[in-house]
Length: 211
Image (cartoon, rainbow, N blue to C red; front, side, top):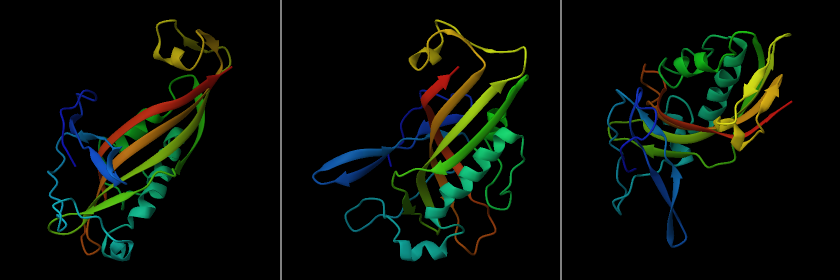
């Protein structure tokens, strides 16, 4: 895990977590979520070779939430956000920039309605043991949302808009978006009263269509 200077989310982030994994004889970047300001410094345990120690699935029972379940829980709340729902897992996830504040931003704007769903992806989940207990978990979630303009309103894609990477400039009444979220999550020990905390996130649209 290599912290680097952030180039985005300047108002709410401070640096980037970079995770590399060994594949054959090469090191490949797996995750690089931006770090939330105020996130605690990470102190992963080292293995005998000096690298961050991956948790074995047999040790997941010692964590507040099994790492392979976190993505599903987060996906539920990310999908619910578009329906104006409040945090459904308040006892699991701590409120913050990448949970409650993000979900509020995902709600449809004025003169819009939305329907969405979110699911874990096929990308691997990595859980690294932390000194003092718990783990930092890196995972991904895919969100699919369709926004529909109210009668008499529309969406405008301007020629200089970033949307033109996916759609031609013009006027649309419906936009469908697929967005990939990469997260860094502090998963406390099972005996802790602390909630699971999302401390890092990056996201990007992978497809946008409209008509």
